[in-house]
Length: 221
Image 1 (cartoon, one colour):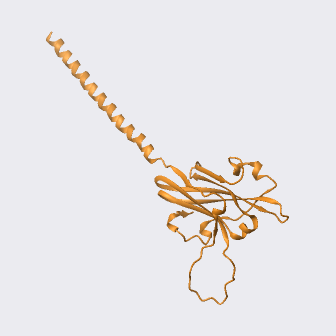
Image 2 (image 1 turned 120 degrees about the horizontal axis):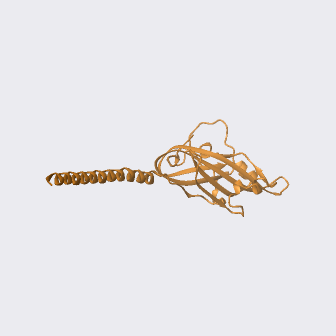
Image 3 (image 1 turned 90 degrees about the horizontal axis):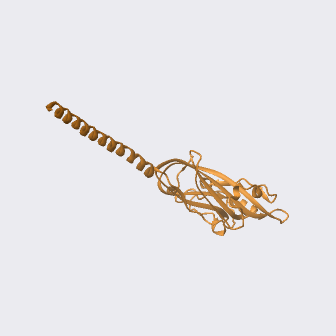
């Protein structure tokens, strides 16, 4: 009888200890999994286009004037201030650092050909930024005055932001004319006889605006 009681006590002790270890292991697994799930949420990089200007007269800006003192043997050509088509985009990132982002810009301008007939001019370029810290940033491209004068002012603008894995993180478009939803991918628009492809949409670093508010812009690769 005493032996049975002793065996019972040992069995009961074994069950209690086993339950304690099992509970401890489950608690430990819970602690390991939970922070991992939370980490995914906190490290997710939210990339958002915060502001895009409408592609109308507000995007047409006169060349900035700088005051310098320099001896020049050649007199300045007298002419009125010329106008650039300037597209300044504000965007935000939520990760502490973003390795790189590619900005694909698409612009449509409306003008006339040599015969006075209406034509549309299609521009595109890509700008890649690297080492982007968390917060608000600016991105900007432009069309030079001579092309604005020759081929017309902007009527449509689109932007796609793509990460280094090739995933589109945000996209936005503004237009003052009727166009398909993703007009920059539409064959009906791009293959239209009235649409002409043009070169000349450039990053702001290639314009006189390059040194204005320079800290708002990240390094272009």
